[in-house]
Structure formats: C-alpha cells, structure tokens
Amino acid sequence: MPVRYRERLHERCEGKLVLTIDTDERCLLLYPLPEWEAIEARLEALPSFDATSRRIQRLLIGHATEAELDGTGRIMVPPLLRDYASLQKALILVGQGKKFELWSETDWQQRRDVWLEAASAPQDSASLPEALQVLSI
Image 1 (cartoon, rainbow, N blue to C red):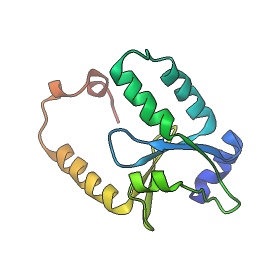
Image 2 (image 1 turned 60 degrees about the vertical axis):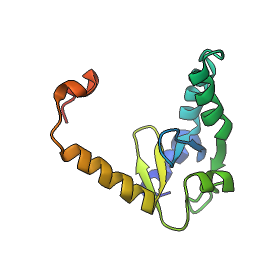
Image 3 (image 1 turned 120 degrees about the horizontal axis):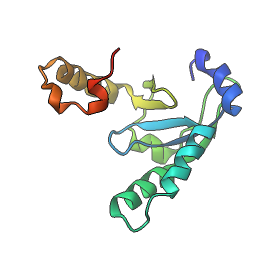
C-alpha cells in the first residue's frame, strides 16, 4: 500500500481491509473494513429468490477475504484471489473513492487503453446515463 494511504487507512479502519473480486473485470476490490460492512449489509438485504441478486451475493460475499496491513504496508492476497486477477509481481493499485482496485499491470494497461480509445470516440450524449450527462468535471 503506498505510504500516502497508510496513515488514513490506519485511522479509518486500523489497517483492516476486505478483498473481493470485481464481477465485471478481472481485478480485485479492496475496501476498508467499515466500507465493506456497509456494502455487505446491502448485499445481504437483496432478495434471495432473485437469480441476479444471488449471483452477486455469491461472488462478492463468497470471495470476501479479510486482510490487514502489516508494518510495512503490505497485505497477503490469498492464492484464489491472486489467480482470479492474474496477479504476479507487477501490480497496479487504482484509487476509486471509498475503495481501491488491484490489477495486474498487464491487464490494467490493456483495459485502460480500451477505455481511453472508447472515450476519444464521438458519442451520442443520449447514450450516457443521466447522472453522467449532468456531471461537470
């Protein structure tokens, strides 16, 4: 974990984190424990007889693994999660507001290039979700 995040993570969650898989991409999601607990509660409240809800519950909750920053800011990523995200030696940690994404460097570069190419293509504003149409950055 980069130094710039360690102090805040220790203040926010005493260095306790939860790793799980991303259901859309081959990366891992890394949450401070309090953030994960709120998400887990919302996931558990989904209707259990809805197939899509059950799939998401199984994948996100089923892969959720607690981790803790060690004295040098490292965490242990279990083999199952490392395999899912193809994590080897070169990793990319991407801040995403209340969570991080952990990517293999190769996968991140490939996906980033695809996203950048799509972002530079002309788009019909009607194809954007309404929330993005009014976003000013």
